[in-house]
Length: 500
Image (cartoon, rainbow, N blue to C red; front, side):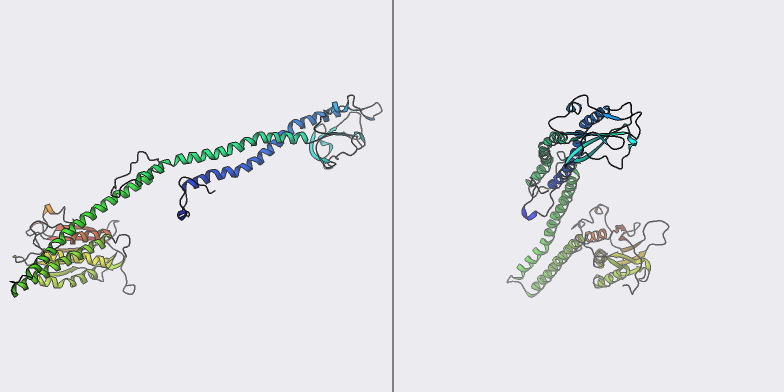
Protein backbone atom coordinates (compact mmCIF):
# COMPACT_ATOMS: atom_id res chain seq x y z
CA UNK A 1 0.00 0.00 0.00
CA UNK A 2 1.88 3.13 -1.14
CA UNK A 3 1.47 5.93 1.34
CA UNK A 4 3.20 9.30 1.84
CA UNK A 5 4.88 9.85 5.19
CA UNK A 6 7.61 12.00 6.78
CA UNK A 7 10.33 9.58 5.68
CA UNK A 8 9.28 9.34 2.03
CA UNK A 9 12.24 9.59 -0.32
CA UNK A 10 12.59 11.82 -3.33
CA UNK A 11 11.88 10.58 -6.86
CA UNK A 12 15.49 9.61 -7.55
CA UNK A 13 15.51 7.40 -4.45
CA UNK A 14 12.04 5.91 -5.00
CA UNK A 15 13.51 2.45 -5.56
CA UNK A 16 14.72 2.37 -1.95
CA UNK A 17 12.48 0.72 0.62
CA UNK A 18 10.77 2.88 3.23
CA UNK A 19 10.80 1.52 6.77
CA UNK A 20 7.78 3.68 7.66
CA UNK A 21 5.80 2.50 4.63
CA UNK A 22 6.76 -1.15 5.13
CA UNK A 23 5.64 -1.17 8.77
CA UNK A 24 2.42 0.62 7.79
CA UNK A 25 1.78 -1.93 5.04
CA UNK A 26 2.31 -4.89 7.35
CA UNK A 27 -0.05 -3.38 9.93
CA UNK A 28 -2.85 -2.19 7.65
CA UNK A 29 -2.85 -4.89 4.95
CA UNK A 30 -3.98 -7.72 7.30
CA UNK A 31 -6.59 -5.38 8.75
CA UNK A 32 -8.03 -4.52 5.32
CA UNK A 33 -7.88 -8.15 4.17
CA UNK A 34 -9.68 -9.42 7.27
CA UNK A 35 -12.42 -6.79 7.07
CA UNK A 36 -14.35 -8.45 4.15
CA UNK A 37 -13.99 -11.79 5.93
CA UNK A 38 -15.43 -10.17 9.04
CA UNK A 39 -18.35 -8.91 6.95
CA UNK A 40 -19.10 -12.41 5.64
CA UNK A 41 -18.89 -13.99 9.09
CA UNK A 42 -21.07 -11.24 10.58
CA UNK A 43 -23.70 -11.77 7.85
CA UNK A 44 -23.80 -15.52 8.53
CA UNK A 45 -24.07 -14.96 12.27
CA UNK A 46 -26.79 -12.34 11.74
CA UNK A 47 -28.80 -14.77 9.60
CA UNK A 48 -28.52 -17.43 12.30
CA UNK A 49 -29.52 -15.00 15.03
CA UNK A 50 -32.46 -13.70 12.99
CA UNK A 51 -33.74 -17.24 12.36
CA UNK A 52 -33.78 -18.39 15.98
CA UNK A 53 -36.72 -16.33 17.43
CA UNK A 54 -38.89 -16.81 14.34
CA UNK A 55 -38.05 -20.52 14.18
CA UNK A 56 -39.29 -20.85 17.76
CA UNK A 57 -42.54 -19.10 16.72
CA UNK A 58 -42.93 -21.53 13.82
CA UNK A 59 -42.39 -24.49 16.15
CA UNK A 60 -45.04 -23.10 18.46
CA UNK A 61 -47.48 -22.69 15.58
CA UNK A 62 -46.94 -26.17 14.17
CA UNK A 63 -47.38 -27.75 17.60
CA UNK A 64 -50.53 -25.66 18.14
CA UNK A 65 -51.99 -26.93 14.85
CA UNK A 66 -50.95 -30.48 15.67
CA UNK A 67 -53.03 -30.34 18.83
CA UNK A 68 -56.12 -29.69 16.66
CA UNK A 69 -55.84 -33.07 14.93
CA UNK A 70 -57.93 -35.81 16.60
CA UNK A 71 -59.65 -39.11 15.90
CA UNK A 72 -63.44 -39.57 16.25
CA UNK A 73 -65.13 -42.68 17.53
CA UNK A 74 -65.09 -44.31 14.13
CA UNK A 75 -61.32 -43.83 13.70
CA UNK A 76 -61.58 -40.94 11.27
CA UNK A 77 -59.14 -38.04 11.39
CA UNK A 78 -60.61 -34.66 12.13
CA UNK A 79 -59.01 -31.19 12.11
CA UNK A 80 -60.68 -28.01 13.33
CA UNK A 81 -59.58 -24.60 14.50
CA UNK A 82 -61.60 -23.43 17.48
CA UNK A 83 -60.01 -19.97 17.23
CA UNK A 84 -59.68 -17.66 14.22
CA UNK A 85 -56.91 -18.79 11.91
CA UNK A 86 -54.85 -15.60 12.20
CA UNK A 87 -54.94 -15.85 16.01
CA UNK A 88 -53.69 -19.43 15.97
CA UNK A 89 -50.90 -18.74 13.44
CA UNK A 90 -49.88 -15.40 14.93
CA UNK A 91 -50.02 -13.72 11.57
CA UNK A 92 -48.76 -10.19 11.07
CA UNK A 93 -48.56 -7.58 8.36
CA UNK A 94 -44.89 -8.25 7.45
CA UNK A 95 -45.07 -11.93 6.52
CA UNK A 96 -47.56 -14.40 5.06
CA UNK A 97 -48.34 -17.66 6.87
CA UNK A 98 -49.30 -20.94 5.21
CA UNK A 99 -50.20 -24.30 6.69
CA UNK A 100 -51.21 -27.78 5.58
CA UNK A 101 -52.37 -30.92 7.37
CA UNK A 102 -52.04 -34.28 5.59
CA UNK A 103 -53.65 -37.48 6.78
CA UNK A 104 -52.00 -40.79 7.20
CA UNK A 105 -52.68 -41.71 3.57
CA UNK A 106 -51.57 -38.34 2.23
CA UNK A 107 -55.05 -36.82 1.92
CA UNK A 108 -55.31 -33.17 2.74
CA UNK A 109 -57.27 -32.47 5.90
CA UNK A 110 -56.82 -28.68 5.91
CA UNK A 111 -54.70 -25.82 4.70
CA UNK A 112 -53.16 -24.92 1.40
CA UNK A 113 -53.63 -27.14 -1.61
CA UNK A 114 -50.35 -26.14 -3.23
CA UNK A 115 -47.90 -26.51 -0.40
CA UNK A 116 -44.20 -27.50 -0.66
CA UNK A 117 -44.11 -31.25 -0.32
CA UNK A 118 -42.17 -32.81 2.49
CA UNK A 119 -38.83 -34.16 1.19
CA UNK A 120 -39.28 -37.73 0.03
CA UNK A 121 -35.97 -38.74 1.59
CA UNK A 122 -37.34 -38.00 5.01
CA UNK A 123 -39.44 -40.53 6.90
CA UNK A 124 -41.70 -40.52 9.87
CA UNK A 125 -38.80 -41.64 12.06
CA UNK A 126 -38.68 -38.14 13.51
CA UNK A 127 -42.20 -38.37 14.92
CA UNK A 128 -42.79 -35.80 17.61
CA UNK A 129 -39.83 -33.62 16.61
CA UNK A 130 -40.22 -30.40 14.63
CA UNK A 131 -38.17 -30.38 11.43
CA UNK A 132 -37.20 -26.99 9.93
CA UNK A 133 -36.24 -26.37 6.33
CA UNK A 134 -36.03 -23.69 3.63
CA UNK A 135 -38.37 -24.05 0.65
CA UNK A 136 -40.30 -22.07 -1.99
CA UNK A 137 -43.98 -21.48 -2.89
CA UNK A 138 -44.90 -19.57 -6.05
CA UNK A 139 -41.26 -18.35 -6.25
CA UNK A 140 -41.39 -16.95 -2.72
CA UNK A 141 -38.80 -18.15 -0.21
CA UNK A 142 -40.32 -19.78 2.84
CA UNK A 143 -39.22 -21.12 6.16
CA UNK A 144 -41.13 -24.36 6.81
CA UNK A 145 -41.70 -26.24 10.06
CA UNK A 146 -42.98 -29.84 9.79
CA UNK A 147 -44.19 -32.21 12.52
CA UNK A 148 -45.20 -35.83 12.28
CA UNK A 149 -47.97 -36.56 14.80
CA UNK A 150 -48.71 -40.10 15.95
CA UNK A 151 -52.33 -40.33 17.09
CA UNK A 152 -53.69 -43.15 19.28
CA UNK A 153 -56.28 -45.40 17.71
CA UNK A 154 -55.28 -44.12 14.28
CA UNK A 155 -54.08 -46.68 11.80
CA UNK A 156 -51.98 -46.03 8.70
CA UNK A 157 -49.13 -43.97 10.16
CA UNK A 158 -48.63 -40.51 11.59
CA UNK A 159 -50.18 -37.26 10.42
CA UNK A 160 -48.02 -34.54 8.82
CA UNK A 161 -48.59 -30.95 9.98
CA UNK A 162 -46.61 -28.17 8.20
CA UNK A 163 -46.51 -24.41 8.77
CA UNK A 164 -44.61 -22.00 6.45
CA UNK A 165 -43.75 -18.35 6.77
CA UNK A 166 -42.22 -15.86 4.34
CA UNK A 167 -38.78 -14.49 5.28
CA UNK A 168 -39.42 -10.75 5.29
CA UNK A 169 -39.10 -10.25 9.07
CA UNK A 170 -35.98 -12.41 9.12
CA UNK A 171 -34.31 -10.35 6.38
CA UNK A 172 -35.23 -7.12 8.13
CA UNK A 173 -33.83 -8.35 11.45
CA UNK A 174 -30.61 -9.67 9.81
CA UNK A 175 -30.15 -6.33 8.03
CA UNK A 176 -30.63 -4.45 11.30
CA UNK A 177 -28.03 -6.66 12.99
CA UNK A 178 -25.60 -6.10 10.13
CA UNK A 179 -26.15 -2.34 10.33
CA UNK A 180 -25.68 -2.32 14.06
CA UNK A 181 -22.42 -4.24 13.79
CA UNK A 182 -20.90 -2.92 10.56
CA UNK A 183 -21.82 0.74 10.54
CA UNK A 184 -19.62 1.49 13.56
CA UNK A 185 -16.76 -0.27 11.75
CA UNK A 186 -16.91 2.27 8.93
CA UNK A 187 -16.04 4.85 11.58
CA UNK A 188 -13.66 2.68 13.60
CA UNK A 189 -11.59 1.48 10.61
CA UNK A 190 -10.51 4.94 9.36
CA UNK A 191 -9.94 5.97 12.96
CA UNK A 192 -7.75 2.88 13.48
CA UNK A 193 -5.76 3.72 10.32
CA UNK A 194 -5.30 7.28 11.57
CA UNK A 195 -4.19 6.10 15.02
CA UNK A 196 -1.71 3.63 13.47
CA UNK A 197 -0.36 6.44 11.29
CA UNK A 198 0.04 8.78 14.27
CA UNK A 199 1.62 6.02 16.38
CA UNK A 200 4.20 5.22 13.68
CA UNK A 201 4.92 8.90 13.13
CA UNK A 202 5.51 9.34 16.84
CA UNK A 203 7.51 6.11 17.01
CA UNK A 204 10.04 7.21 14.40
CA UNK A 205 10.60 10.64 15.91
CA UNK A 206 13.76 9.40 17.71
CA UNK A 207 15.14 8.49 14.27
CA UNK A 208 14.34 11.99 13.02
CA UNK A 209 16.06 13.54 16.04
CA UNK A 210 19.06 11.25 15.52
CA UNK A 211 19.21 12.31 11.86
CA UNK A 212 19.10 15.99 12.85
CA UNK A 213 21.87 15.48 15.43
CA UNK A 214 24.07 13.88 12.78
CA UNK A 215 23.28 16.51 10.12
CA UNK A 216 24.22 19.47 12.35
CA UNK A 217 27.59 17.97 13.21
CA UNK A 218 30.72 19.55 11.85
CA UNK A 219 32.87 17.43 9.53
CA UNK A 220 35.72 17.33 12.04
CA UNK A 221 33.47 16.17 14.90
CA UNK A 222 33.99 12.40 15.15
CA UNK A 223 32.93 12.02 18.79
CA UNK A 224 30.59 9.18 19.73
CA UNK A 225 26.83 9.69 19.45
CA UNK A 226 24.87 9.93 22.69
CA UNK A 227 23.05 6.62 23.25
CA UNK A 228 20.91 7.69 26.24
CA UNK A 229 18.03 9.06 24.10
CA UNK A 230 18.15 6.27 21.52
CA UNK A 231 15.44 3.53 21.48
CA UNK A 232 16.57 0.01 22.28
CA UNK A 233 15.82 -1.17 18.73
CA UNK A 234 18.16 1.47 17.26
CA UNK A 235 20.85 1.10 19.94
CA UNK A 236 22.83 -1.64 18.08
CA UNK A 237 22.95 0.57 14.97
CA UNK A 238 24.13 3.62 16.94
CA UNK A 239 26.69 1.46 18.78
CA UNK A 240 28.03 0.20 15.43
CA UNK A 241 28.22 3.80 14.14
CA UNK A 242 30.09 4.85 17.29
CA UNK A 243 32.51 1.97 16.78
CA UNK A 244 33.04 3.08 13.18
CA UNK A 245 33.60 6.69 14.32
CA UNK A 246 36.18 5.47 16.85
CA UNK A 247 38.08 3.53 14.21
CA UNK A 248 37.82 6.49 11.86
CA UNK A 249 39.23 8.81 14.53
CA UNK A 250 42.16 6.46 15.04
CA UNK A 251 42.75 6.16 11.29
CA UNK A 252 42.65 9.94 10.77
CA UNK A 253 44.96 10.49 13.73
CA UNK A 254 47.40 7.97 12.27
CA UNK A 255 47.22 9.63 8.87
CA UNK A 256 47.81 13.09 10.33
CA UNK A 257 50.77 11.86 12.33
CA UNK A 258 52.08 9.97 9.32
CA UNK A 259 51.81 13.01 7.04
CA UNK A 260 53.47 15.24 9.62
CA UNK A 261 56.34 12.78 10.08
CA UNK A 262 56.67 12.28 6.32
CA UNK A 263 56.83 16.04 5.75
CA UNK A 264 59.46 16.32 8.46
CA UNK A 265 61.54 13.48 7.03
CA UNK A 266 61.40 14.85 3.48
CA UNK A 267 62.23 18.36 4.63
CA UNK A 268 65.82 17.49 5.56
CA UNK A 269 66.98 15.99 2.22
CA UNK A 270 65.10 18.66 0.26
CA UNK A 271 66.73 21.40 2.33
CA UNK A 272 70.13 19.78 1.68
CA UNK A 273 69.42 19.71 -2.05
CA UNK A 274 68.52 23.39 -2.05
CA UNK A 275 71.57 24.35 -0.02
CA UNK A 276 73.97 22.38 -2.22
CA UNK A 277 72.39 23.86 -5.34
CA UNK A 278 72.86 27.38 -3.94
CA UNK A 279 76.50 26.61 -3.10
CA UNK A 280 77.14 25.24 -6.59
CA UNK A 281 75.83 28.47 -8.09
CA UNK A 282 78.38 30.63 -6.27
CA UNK A 283 80.92 32.15 -8.56
CA UNK A 284 83.92 31.42 -6.33
CA UNK A 285 83.23 27.65 -6.42
CA UNK A 286 86.10 25.66 -7.91
CA UNK A 287 85.85 22.31 -9.64
CA UNK A 288 86.55 20.23 -6.52
CA UNK A 289 83.95 22.11 -4.49
CA UNK A 290 81.41 21.68 -7.28
CA UNK A 291 82.12 17.96 -7.44
CA UNK A 292 81.63 17.59 -3.68
CA UNK A 293 78.37 19.55 -3.87
CA UNK A 294 77.10 17.33 -6.67
CA UNK A 295 78.01 14.25 -4.65
CA UNK A 296 76.07 15.64 -1.72
CA UNK A 297 73.15 16.41 -4.03
CA UNK A 298 73.21 12.80 -5.20
CA UNK A 299 73.18 11.48 -1.64
CA UNK A 300 70.34 13.80 -0.63
CA UNK A 301 68.25 12.84 -3.67
CA UNK A 302 68.94 9.16 -2.99
CA UNK A 303 67.80 9.60 0.60
CA UNK A 304 64.63 11.43 -0.50
CA UNK A 305 63.91 8.72 -3.08
CA UNK A 306 64.40 6.00 -0.47
CA UNK A 307 62.06 7.77 1.96
CA UNK A 308 59.37 8.17 -0.71
CA UNK A 309 59.71 4.51 -1.73
CA UNK A 310 59.37 3.42 1.89
CA UNK A 311 56.30 5.63 2.34
CA UNK A 312 54.71 4.07 -0.72
CA UNK A 313 55.59 0.57 0.49
CA UNK A 314 54.01 1.25 3.90
CA UNK A 315 50.88 2.71 2.31
CA UNK A 316 50.64 -0.30 -0.03
CA UNK A 317 51.00 -2.72 2.88
CA UNK A 318 48.38 -0.92 4.99
CA UNK A 319 45.88 -0.78 2.12
CA UNK A 320 46.25 -4.40 1.02
CA UNK A 321 44.05 -5.91 3.75
CA UNK A 322 40.75 -6.48 1.91
CA UNK A 323 42.22 -6.89 -1.60
CA UNK A 324 45.34 -8.90 -0.76
CA UNK A 325 45.87 -11.52 -3.47
CA UNK A 326 47.20 -14.70 -1.85
CA UNK A 327 48.74 -17.79 -3.37
CA UNK A 328 50.98 -20.63 -2.21
CA UNK A 329 54.56 -19.31 -1.93
CA UNK A 330 57.83 -21.15 -1.30
CA UNK A 331 59.41 -19.10 1.47
CA UNK A 332 62.91 -20.46 0.79
CA UNK A 333 62.75 -19.43 -2.86
CA UNK A 334 61.49 -15.93 -2.01
CA UNK A 335 64.08 -15.42 0.75
CA UNK A 336 67.02 -16.55 -1.41
CA UNK A 337 65.90 -14.35 -4.33
CA UNK A 338 65.78 -11.29 -2.05
CA UNK A 339 69.19 -12.16 -0.57
CA UNK A 340 70.65 -12.27 -4.06
CA UNK A 341 69.14 -8.83 -4.75
CA UNK A 342 70.85 -7.28 -1.70
CA UNK A 343 74.25 -8.89 -2.35
CA UNK A 344 75.63 -5.69 -3.98
CA UNK A 345 74.71 -3.70 -0.86
CA UNK A 346 76.38 -6.33 1.37
CA UNK A 347 79.57 -6.27 -0.74
CA UNK A 348 79.69 -2.46 -0.72
CA UNK A 349 79.50 -2.48 3.10
CA UNK A 350 81.84 -5.49 3.38
CA UNK A 351 79.25 -7.59 5.26
CA UNK A 352 79.33 -11.37 5.16
CA UNK A 353 75.81 -12.49 4.26
CA UNK A 354 74.68 -16.10 4.04
CA UNK A 355 71.75 -18.50 4.17
CA UNK A 356 71.11 -21.44 6.51
CA UNK A 357 68.17 -23.79 6.95
CA UNK A 358 65.71 -25.70 4.81
CA UNK A 359 65.89 -26.45 1.11
CA UNK A 360 63.31 -25.32 -1.40
CA UNK A 361 62.25 -28.96 -1.86
CA UNK A 362 61.25 -29.40 1.80
CA UNK A 363 57.46 -29.69 2.30
CA UNK A 364 57.20 -27.43 5.34
CA UNK A 365 58.33 -24.17 3.68
CA UNK A 366 55.13 -23.26 1.82
CA UNK A 367 52.96 -20.39 3.02
CA UNK A 368 49.78 -18.75 1.74
CA UNK A 369 50.53 -15.11 0.97
CA UNK A 370 51.33 -12.34 -1.45
CA UNK A 371 54.82 -12.91 -2.95
CA UNK A 372 55.45 -9.20 -3.63
CA UNK A 373 54.72 -8.17 -0.03
CA UNK A 374 56.61 -11.14 1.41
CA UNK A 375 59.67 -10.17 -0.65
CA UNK A 376 59.31 -6.58 0.61
CA UNK A 377 59.26 -7.93 4.17
CA UNK A 378 62.45 -9.99 3.73
CA UNK A 379 64.16 -7.11 1.87
CA UNK A 380 63.47 -4.66 4.70
CA UNK A 381 64.73 -7.09 7.33
CA UNK A 382 67.93 -7.77 5.38
CA UNK A 383 68.70 -4.13 4.52
CA UNK A 384 67.98 -3.12 8.12
CA UNK A 385 70.41 -5.78 9.37
CA UNK A 386 73.07 -4.75 6.83
CA UNK A 387 72.84 -1.09 7.91
CA UNK A 388 73.27 -1.89 11.60
CA UNK A 389 76.17 -4.32 11.32
CA UNK A 390 79.41 -3.11 13.07
CA UNK A 391 81.82 -1.20 10.84
CA UNK A 392 85.53 -1.05 11.67
CA UNK A 393 85.25 -3.05 14.91
CA UNK A 394 86.98 -6.19 16.01
CA UNK A 395 84.10 -8.40 14.96
CA UNK A 396 83.58 -9.15 11.31
CA UNK A 397 80.11 -7.90 10.26
CA UNK A 398 77.80 -10.76 9.33
CA UNK A 399 74.12 -11.27 8.50
CA UNK A 400 72.50 -14.71 8.46
CA UNK A 401 69.17 -15.55 6.80
CA UNK A 402 67.38 -18.72 7.95
CA UNK A 403 64.18 -20.55 7.02
CA UNK A 404 63.41 -23.28 9.57
CA UNK A 405 60.35 -25.54 9.20
CA UNK A 406 58.68 -26.51 12.45
CA UNK A 407 59.70 -29.96 13.73
CA UNK A 408 57.22 -32.79 14.21
CA UNK A 409 54.36 -31.47 16.33
CA UNK A 410 52.82 -33.25 19.30
CA UNK A 411 49.99 -30.71 19.79
CA UNK A 412 47.04 -29.34 17.84
CA UNK A 413 48.48 -25.93 16.91
CA UNK A 414 48.69 -25.39 13.12
CA UNK A 415 52.20 -25.96 11.69
CA UNK A 416 54.42 -22.93 11.09
CA UNK A 417 57.66 -22.03 9.36
CA UNK A 418 60.15 -19.66 10.97
CA UNK A 419 62.04 -16.93 9.08
CA UNK A 420 65.08 -15.49 10.91
CA UNK A 421 67.35 -12.58 10.01
CA UNK A 422 70.26 -12.34 12.44
CA UNK A 423 73.09 -9.79 12.63
CA UNK A 424 75.99 -9.23 15.02
CA UNK A 425 75.40 -5.51 15.40
CA UNK A 426 74.97 -3.48 18.57
CA UNK A 427 71.39 -4.70 19.12
CA UNK A 428 68.35 -2.74 20.28
CA UNK A 429 68.48 -0.83 23.54
CA UNK A 430 65.88 -1.80 26.14
CA UNK A 431 64.38 1.71 26.22
CA UNK A 432 63.93 1.68 22.41
CA UNK A 433 62.13 -1.67 22.07
CA UNK A 434 58.73 -0.11 22.88
CA UNK A 435 59.07 2.38 19.99
CA UNK A 436 60.97 0.36 17.41
CA UNK A 437 57.84 -0.28 15.27
CA UNK A 438 56.69 3.36 15.28
CA UNK A 439 56.98 5.05 11.85
CA UNK A 440 60.05 7.31 11.51
CA UNK A 441 61.43 6.29 14.91
CA UNK A 442 65.22 6.16 15.02
CA UNK A 443 67.35 5.62 18.15
CA UNK A 444 69.23 8.63 19.49
CA UNK A 445 72.84 8.84 18.38
CA UNK A 446 72.22 6.67 15.34
CA UNK A 447 74.29 7.75 12.35
CA UNK A 448 72.96 5.13 9.92
CA UNK A 449 71.24 6.67 6.91
CA UNK A 450 67.59 5.60 6.81
CA UNK A 451 63.96 6.69 7.08
CA UNK A 452 62.71 4.74 10.10
CA UNK A 453 60.01 3.00 8.03
CA UNK A 454 61.54 -0.44 7.44
CA UNK A 455 60.30 -2.17 10.60
CA UNK A 456 56.77 -0.62 10.47
CA UNK A 457 56.49 -1.97 6.92
CA UNK A 458 57.62 -5.41 8.11
CA UNK A 459 55.12 -5.36 10.98
CA UNK A 460 52.21 -4.38 8.73
CA UNK A 461 53.00 -7.08 6.14
CA UNK A 462 53.33 -9.65 8.93
CA UNK A 463 49.93 -8.61 10.30
CA UNK A 464 48.37 -8.95 6.86
CA UNK A 465 49.66 -12.55 6.67
CA UNK A 466 48.67 -13.56 10.22
CA UNK A 467 52.33 -13.91 11.21
CA UNK A 468 53.97 -13.39 14.60
CA UNK A 469 56.96 -10.97 14.54
CA UNK A 470 59.53 -10.57 17.33
CA UNK A 471 62.85 -8.72 17.62
CA UNK A 472 65.17 -10.56 20.02
CA UNK A 473 68.76 -10.27 21.13
CA UNK A 474 70.83 -12.64 18.98
CA UNK A 475 73.48 -13.20 21.69
CA UNK A 476 72.13 -11.99 25.05
CA UNK A 477 75.18 -13.18 27.02
CA UNK A 478 77.84 -11.23 25.10
CA UNK A 479 78.62 -7.85 23.59
CA UNK A 480 77.61 -6.77 21.08
CA UNK A 481 74.30 -8.58 21.50
CA UNK A 482 73.17 -8.34 17.90
CA UNK A 483 69.57 -8.60 16.76
CA UNK A 484 67.52 -11.55 15.53
CA UNK A 485 64.21 -10.85 13.78
CA UNK A 486 61.95 -13.92 14.13
CA UNK A 487 58.86 -14.29 11.94
CA UNK A 488 56.48 -17.29 12.33
CA UNK A 489 54.08 -17.91 9.42
CA UNK A 490 51.42 -20.64 9.14
CA UNK A 491 52.26 -23.21 6.47
CA UNK A 492 50.18 -24.85 3.75
CA UNK A 493 50.61 -28.17 1.91
CA UNK A 494 53.44 -28.27 -0.59
CA UNK A 495 52.66 -27.44 -4.22
CA UNK A 496 54.05 -29.69 -6.94
CA UNK A 497 56.14 -28.10 -9.73
CA UNK A 498 53.40 -28.95 -12.24
CA UNK A 499 50.77 -27.17 -10.12
CA UNK A 500 53.05 -24.17 -9.80
